[in-house]
Length: 370
Image (tube, rainbow, N blue to C red; front, side, top):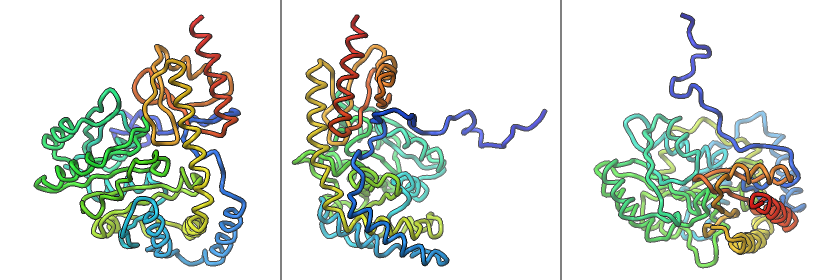
């Protein structure tokens, strides 16, 4: 009998690669990108920084990306953090690589990672790729986290890593600080200890009064808070994710990182972008206002909408959500079909894009009522 070719790992056979649809339509609101590109001044500075880096490409980049870590630490200390030093910051090629490195270091065979659904659909793939056992609990009807359920699962499965986005993807729900504190304590009390990773990929979009988990870093040494430059910084194409944690956690990641994993071009791009943080983040307030208006409008249509601290809105419920998704696509608007059955997610775009979304959804809903 002929062998299967190629000799892919058995648990990977038949699996479709992860990825949202990339379709050429006028209004693309399905992957939570920032619709506003970098400012002309930032583009010019990035171009000059990359040009300078190009002259050094015969040499390996700074393996410890010291200047970048210094810049990221300084930025985090302006957005919820306090006393974060460069030694407490780690970066990689997107928050995807950050998460995979964390599970390579702290997960693995015989170890368990835990989260609560609905949540980011890549988490179980990180666990699979690192041969970490994956356990998923559930969220409440309003997508909040029940602490009794969470503590019970931690006691039962004794995970080495708990992954929790805040705001949550796909729902946009933020974690209250008390939840973070309780879970850090529950993990610290396990015989082997455990770390809590709070994924703040959308942290800059949180509503006024919603704190960042960065505030709790001085209290819990087993807390990791991750961020990305893909969303608020409008640098999805640069692929730069990072986290803040105790120095010991950052040092541990060095064991699993690939040599020189951050290119000189990536480092130069991110460092230049940080110099323009105020202007790059200047559109965040615009997106917050557009998000809040979108949530109000959707609720005004009689739909359920999760409270959102992110740059997207999660809404439903529809008897046939795929028909709604397809109806929007037929009208040139691409959103995301994700999460529990009946729900859809729309990224927040420009005012013109959001008008196109509202007009298209109004038509689709009327069509479905007929």
